[in-house]
Amino acid sequence: MPGDLLLVPFITGLLATGVLALAGPGLFLRGSVWQALALGQWAAVGGVLASILHGPVMPVALLLGATVMALLQRTTDGERLPLAAFLAGLATVTLLAANFSQASLAAAAWAEGQLYFAGPLELSAVAALAVASILLGPGLYRVWRHAQLAPDIPASPAPGHWQRLAETGWLVVAIVLGSVVLGLPGALAGLLLPAWGAAYLAHDMRGLFLWAQTLALVGFLIAWSLSLPLDQPFAPVLVLTHTALALGARLMAFAR
Image (cartoon, rainbow, N blue to C red):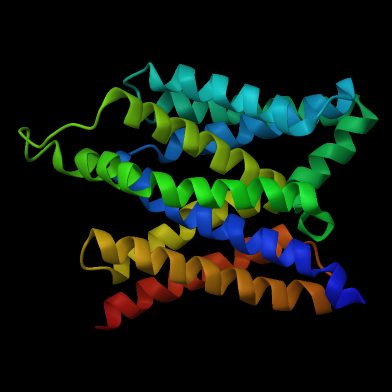
């Protein structure tokens, strides 16, 4: 039955949305939004390149995304260089798509999202990431809390080197895997827009994460219920839904 066939994609997308909604507020707290955009775009470059080389998508996307993130972590320029990297990645995908037929199809898949075709492999990967997110949660929260407090409270205890490394590695996997499942625009929207909307509604750090989860999951459910009956690609519908919810949260905050 069609409902049975769509159960795996639905659960996969729901789990990926929850993980991205956890990462989004963390990125805002650590001031790494532009790095996330660059990472996601170069993961897409890796996926498109893998299609040309007839190689596995996930390892190539992870390798290229992790390389870009590692390079950006070494610079103190948190905006201009990541923005340049993002635009360079976008240009690279465009050139590859213009010169290779396989790349054109892969670029379209990364833009539209392939959630409807997610299978047991994608579900297993996202489920493992969700479990890792729960286990790493306290350490992630400590890293993000320190990033928020450190400028004002220099004596706040700093997280250890391994905690920072684990947080960076987790972010890379979350963004790349989210992009593979939801498409790059859908993943970036699920990463950033619920956190943006949550910032208008939350009164503390815990509220920021709770509101981000709520907005992200509601957005996913609305987009799922709209895209299927209208026979539309999922990622653009998800982006528009998250945008509407974030703007609604902003209006709610101003109406108080």
